[in-house]
Image (cartoon, rainbow over all chains, first blue to last red; front, side, top):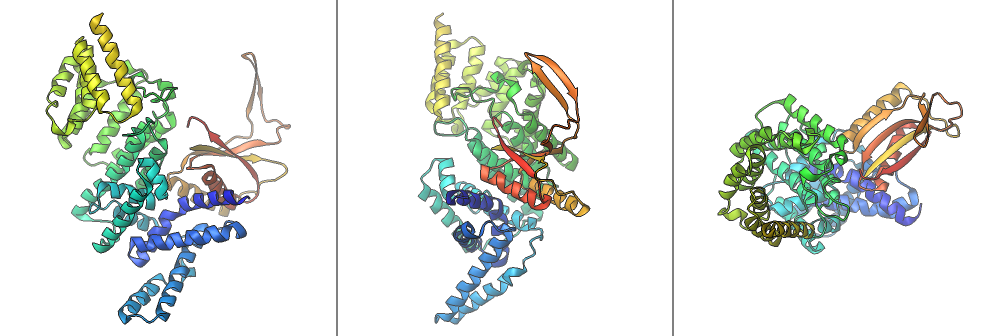
Length: 423
Length: 111
């Protein structure tokens, strides 16, 4: 195998193994930053040695043993230098916690460590941006460069964000554990939020020329599926997975041949990915089996499922969808939910009823520069034959979106309304 | 990216016959891949396929098994991986358990 090929192979092994490796090392050294440095050190060693030796039979165990060896060597070198006794003491303690590098049982179930790593990466002490970057880096196995490209920010920005996040976790001495009791709900909701934000960034890219970046959707789905196996008794985890699977089933149907976005009701449903839809329904079923109160992700997944079930757009059960939005608005009231409710009510009970809800949002400060509000109002006004107003709304929406493809689509709709108004 | 991985019955590389130990190890690997969010579907194929030949839409249907079919597909796994290399790595883990044999990995377009 040529050298570039083996480097790509090592990258692939790294992506598969890195999260478990960092998780297990964090348990040993109690510091996520240090653990990642150790894991990176092992990766460097692999890049040096594997081109000669080939990929070891158990690459995960190899990386783990190498990371530990390197750390112990480092400690020994440090001890030889004359240093303060307390530093030496700390290093020796670290050496002890590393144990015998060869002793690690490769069959050991590292699921608990992985779960701890997920919770620490999504810790609310970190900013949202930091949580996203750190999660993709530690759990998704993405490089800072890949994360930077996914979020369209300069690489040094992401690198900085990750360094700071690790320092924050270390300084605040955030324990490496899965929260329990009352804390669990809030912390889990932060984890789910991070995964869904990653998914959404891929699903409807907020900026840039592409309408979607499916790579990020896949990263989020993979994280969600992993989490669902680790927390089988949490209905909202299955709810989130269901939501992502069903939404992802439409990825290829929602982009036209020239890259333009295609709205849900105009999509060719034959192109919806039935395998992902089935997986989504299975996840919803798992959530139901666990039981408990309906949370926001399960409700949203149920809404997505209503669409997935309809063979034709006109078969959509809008009554059920608007009822689900009513429930969603009750447990997580927000202007965005209200806006979606306006759409559903508009479909179920006519544009007038929908517009009534949408109109209550026009003074909502958080939606001031949100392009979907004028876009939805434009749509409802158009259905009511109020083309001039609709045209204005579409124009406003087009000036607010940061997505180039969507901008075009909205301008087209504005032009169509203008033609209708004059015709 | 989605990949279809198939194992074939190749007379040049006869597959290691499965024993209970291999079954257990394979079960574990499949579980691991599912837990890692990678495995979408998996299955085995019956050895007696139905052959369909179309001549401008006019079908000739023949029941198997076909003695002349030297390289029948015997099992498949549909996986979601980040790259071709990652798919190969999962295939390597599969063959570490399965022993000798031959297979093919196809990228699935539009998946």
